[in-house]
Image (cartoon, rainbow, N blue to C red):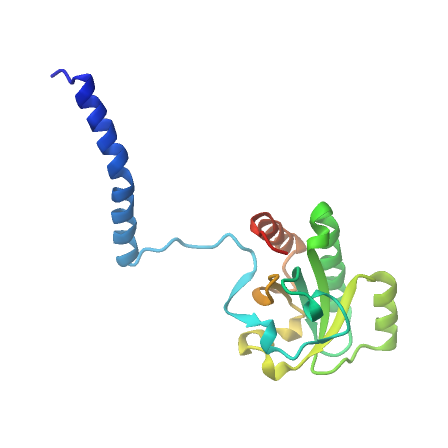
Length: 194
């Protein structure tokens, strides 16, 4: 059977026209049948209910979380009491992440937030001012934090806040810092703000 040029053009046009419709029907059928892709590309744990910064009584002396909207991407580390070995390790890791961001390092800020009261010793405050001069310090009331977050505070986790003040990802302090770095690079690449 010989297909004329006119008929082959119609077949090609029909295929081009039908392709998005077929894709739409196929994806709808997969969705309503309960299929969903497994796994995520982010390394941190996505918070089901983002932490709304506006709802927290965050007390900081300076920095984007105090007076900037939209602000910058913020790595917030929580600590209960004084900064001990695990706290210092995570502070060092977050500083290294900021350094490794190179030209994008000015788009990310870091915070150390004490839960309930500022229990940092004078030695810790002195060490922070000497070794981490760009780190912002503050306090927060634990009863205002979501239960899913407050249960994990003993591990000095990182929480990644977007420039609009939403805590979206939480990272266990035992995760290698490269995991957080990968996620930050992805959000900076895809973010138009912050």
